[in-house]
Image (tube, rainbow, N blue to C red; front, side, top):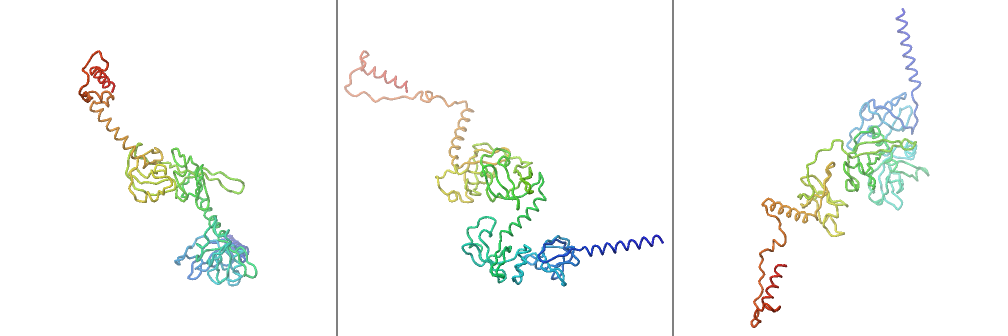
Length: 424
């Protein structure tokens, strides 16, 4: 009897809990941003559990790429916007503009912040004209990109996603922003990067800008600084001698410091490798043959058997103002001499104009070593001239005979000549 009562109580408890969950299910409204889990994938729709009374659905084409492949699977989390909620169920969207667009859709996009797809039709003085499903919109020049845009014509004919900022005059005046979409994307990237941001983590990045004190690295929506002292194990005089803007680099997080009260972080990075590979020893004045691999503003990179090295502009041996790209095309074979090699980073500093002088020094050293081995010294200038006989021309006919007492006699002249030979 007691067991039966326990079972009845358990059933009543479960029923009560179910009713509570049902009554407490979230209510959604159009324009609301929601997050859910993909529960089922159908032929036309993807069903998402967002914690509401009924499952929400999203049209399959909303979550496919250009090739028609699904970008989600069962169990994935998905963020979307409620397009409608009624007797027919809850319809979600992650992007707008693929179907028909009217004022209602534009207002929904504005309220929800959901990107809407459009095609740039014309570049005008102050920005871009954008066609969004038959509706003409305007994107100001300041809202085209995160950075400054100079050539607006490059965007004409391209498809992008925009955020609707304003809808006025019943849809006759629509202002959109591509910059807002890009900022959201960067924030999403930054959120993913922040999850991996711990001291010691190794990340990939792109050199965003170079300053005298270091380089700012874009980690994917969030920036960190590599101080000049962290560019390598050895001394670095100029940041641009080591890396350049746009270069892909691997960095390691060395410090994370809160900045202000907004949750921002000052991210300190390092390009020093914890396990630096051992480099082949190569001394200064070593001459190498290599091929031009890259031409930069600050010099020419040359690939040699000892690795890639930099020939700074002032070591190229070309006239001032000459174009290094014309003098040193990619793939050209060149002779270089090693100026220095950092024993920790392994970076080579090379010279092309110094090759001739290095060859002279090398030849002189070889000659001196050979003489030393044979027991012959270089000798003094007197020893080199010893035994050299200086022959004077014969005295002219009719010249006075030799007179020892006469200072102008041939004998005295001969003595002076002997003196000259000794002084030579």
